Image 1 (cartoon, one colour):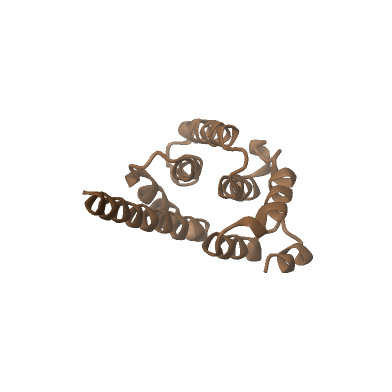
Image 2 (spheres, one colour):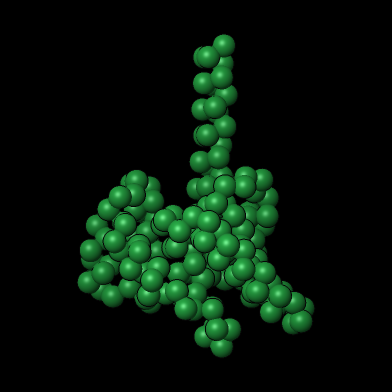
Length: 161
């Protein structure tokens, strides 16, 4: 019985991990084009998990929906709803580095006129100070983000090795 339960748990964990990888990969490409943004939104919407990281990506997808929507009146509501959701998830999980990375990337790429960029310095400092405690997959993800980021300096990017 324990063996069956262990196999089921491993099976579920495997597919949850691949879902997270799909979210990460899609999110990393989302800003390259409107088609990639729409792909990320679709991948995020299909996620059934309700863990904090998945919720963070879903919130980012809501914010990014403002970029691709054709309904101009909805843009503000997409950003507001997504930003509120992301802030709530981070408030509940303040020590989650991936959630901080999501918020940093959103705030770095959203137009300044929107006014959602107050946590850039805090999130960058948190990521730099907690980077060494992360697993290798997350370290690699952070390195890839930092390499293309406008927020990290060359010295800070070099320190993420």
